[in-house]
Length: 232
Ligand code: DC
Image 1: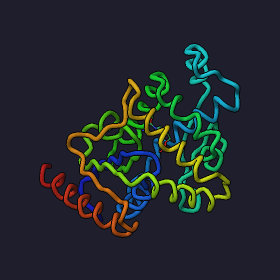
Image 2: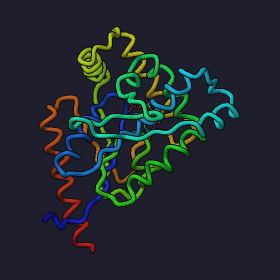
Image 3: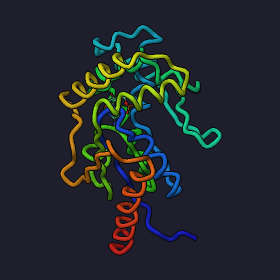
Image 4: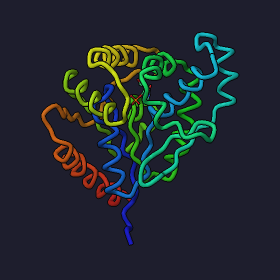
C-alpha cells in the first residue's frame, strides 16, 4: 500500500503552454485527482453565452451563478466537464468560448464561486491542478508549484493541432491572436492576475518533448513528496 503523504501540485502559466497535458500525466502517474480549473471558467462562459447573460451586468452574473452547477466525471479514463449535468467537454473548447472566457474569468464573483469549489476538491490533497492562480490564490500552500512557459508560436501550433484533433476548425492567426489577448487580460486583471508564485519552479518547454517535461516535473514531485513525508 502506498503510505506516502499526498501533496498538492499547482501548475500555472500562459494559455496553451501544455499545462493540462502535464497536469493530466502527473495525476495519472501519482494516482491523484486532476483539477482542470480553466474548464470551470469555460463552463461558466458557455452558460452565459447559451443563456444570453450579459456578463457586464453584475446583477445578472450573480443571479446566473446560482443556476450554474459544474462537476467533473472520468469517462473512459478521460476527464469530462459537466455543466448542469450535461457533458460540455467538447463545447467549452470552441473558439466562441475562448473568445469570451478571459473577461468572464476576470469577474470577482465568478472567481469567488470557482475558487471555493476548487479548494473543496483539494481538501484531502492528492491533487494536481492547472490554471492561472493555482499557486498564488487557490492553493498558496501547495507543496510543488510549477510555472510553465513556451514560445508563443510553438504554443499556437500546439493549440492548432489539438483543436484539429478534436475536429474544431480554427485559423492559425486567429488562435495566436486569441492566445496573446487572453494572456494580456489574464495577467493584467485586478483580481488574481496570472503571475509566477515566488516559490514556483519555472519550466520552459519550448524545446522539450512531453516526455522530457514530464520527467523533469516528476523528479520535482517525488522530491516534494519525500519532504512532505519527512515533515510529518
Ligand atoms: O486553461 P484554459 O485556457 O482552459 O483557461 C481558460 C481561461 O480561464 C483563461 O484564459 C483564463 C481563465 N482561468 C483563470 O482565470 N484562472 C484559472 N485558474 C484557470 C483559467
